[in-house]
Length: 267
Image: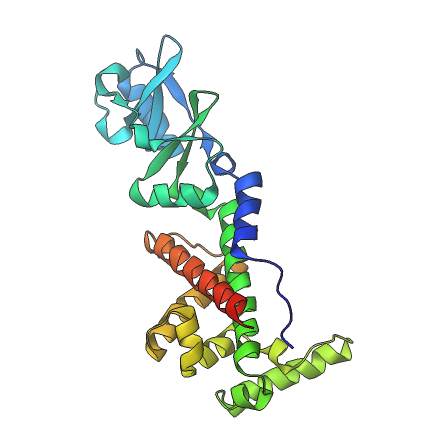
């Protein structure tokens, strides 16, 4: 009998929507009075590596200036009004903030009616985003195991899709874990790559997860595994993946939703 997996994508989303929002990604929005001199502010922005800073008029933040626009005049000559679609309330969920940052280099975070924070793609390296991504990828790996158990009731069937070396590695891990009195079987010792190989070679599993072909499954799951490894080892997940990271997140959510629906339909 397949083990019951009680966590779902919806559970994960609820945790992040209720507990972690764009406010946990944002940095305080540095602002200056509109009468300040451009050269002084530009020097400050270069020193702090800021692309934009806010501009105040009579104490109220009315827009922002870009470092690249500053010349030798006052800030008021270069004010860019806030674009409405880039103003997000502090309660906006992290998944929604990710999608907004795919379309813009920055969003401005509104707290109690005032712009108080700014989030950029660099902030996606922070723990809340990494936790959300790792949570999704962990759920996918668990669902892959659940699907393999559902489709292959006989252990020998899925073993035939792996090389002797991979079976040997899983068997070795099983022996080590049983020495620690863990109540597991061989399937519990499969690595992400092993599960991906089984999916690649099994049409029923490919169809359940929405992959059109074995190559499609191999490529899609390989990208997810690589992202999982980067997250696990605290590596940079933005520089080489932007803006494809957002597309990969959508792909991961789709795979997870399909896996959950497939198991729910099973008698």
